View 1 (tube, helix red, strand yellow):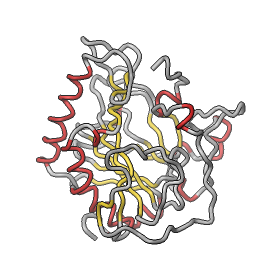
View 2 (cartoon, one colour):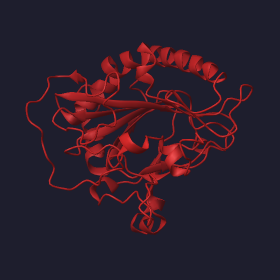
View 3 (cartoon, one colour):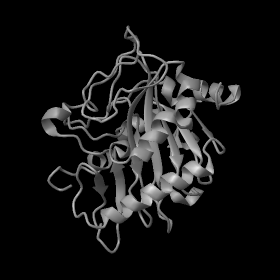
View 4 (cartoon, helix red, strand yellow):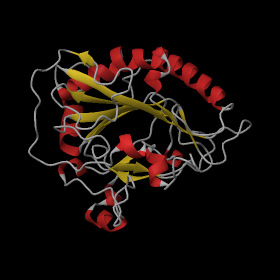
Length: 289
């Protein structure tokens, strides 16, 4: 074990997630915040969502309201250095084994004064793989209290079925249908708050989400997804990514491993264009973005 304790690893395997408060150094936090603040300033010059920024309605130069910095590792080397050689890789190895691949990254801001909710969902339906040794590791770049819409995860939901993220008309929504939520113990969700540097780890099958941020401060959360080397993407969603499928620990595998449990397929993003989870869940078209 590089970073996690056996108890933390057991929590991840049993509950589908774990968290820690002392896994990221102050130096890393300072570097990540410096770069992130520069992107917030850059966003003041942007009027519409695009390949780099996903903006909330109402975003202006005077009052920037970011939902997401898309694929931050493609836009600044500091993010990639952190994602490929920092403590995230040690955590991924502790949970996935000796051979680890990077999949993708994003930086969700959850802006102050009503930053949009992320409805309950599972990740793997967005980017299916041949098996479920795929996880997402996040770090809060600032202090996150209970009133700042921390991420909530439903314990043991990773061991349940995968849910349909399409509506009854066959349109992709990116969230679990209201009637299906009755099959889940929503009240058991654990909301992972903590000081700057708090790390969250959740399995790709774990049901998670977060309410709107009604506090006076944004809630920036840098997220990176990793997989075991023998978990192979079924779609080409991240094929154009600068560092997608890079081996960050160990060696490339010669064999793909297949989990017998099926995985639902998302829309063909190459034809209809991929939008962020916020745009899908809010029903925004690409023209509106």
